[in-house]
Image (cartoon, rainbow, N blue to C red):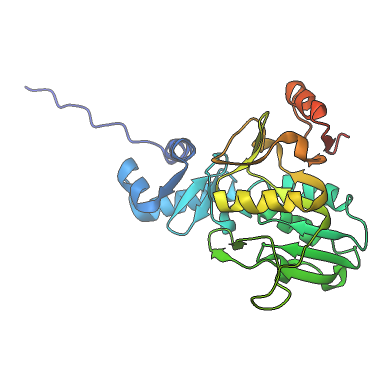
Length: 269
């Protein structure tokens, strides 16, 4: 009598979710349909697994799929980035707000860290703020600023920000206003020994121009950005006055920042 081949061992749900989490971290960004095909289960099963992994903070649920909570995708949508490193961003925002005096003129670039900073300015008064971050006007306390300006340009829906020149016109078609600020607060995507970088060239150009127009510059970046390099360099380390972060850099990188005369502002300093 011919022996019957054993049926494949069925994976336990916990094991599948662990495999799913590992796969999402490896790939970075996935769809529900792709996961269902990869793991040979139903779309409803994948949705339930992703919902649970999202609640556990392992993945970030998106419309129709998920992204890794740990991976470093170059250009995530704003609604995804708002849910990443939230505690770190709040820490950075609180520390960065401490660098801003009442009555100061401040430029803020696009990003979720600068958005957190804008919310952290609720106890400030008489600020003049210029930004390309389209979310800031709706989220900053009206009592914090005297004047709020938004730079024009093309709107990038994925970041909810404008990309264009850091200028304003006196009149339509007229001469540009020569604008300056006391402090540029610049959130970047990556930092290494060569300097600060981001994933989009247009963003990099705007950030560099904001820095050029500032008396002082504070770079805002959580520690997950250290030792990384993205597509477009913004500027070199020595153009920053401060690095505001959630955790002190490793000694070798801290030495590079010290040589560039960048003051580290972190909870441990």
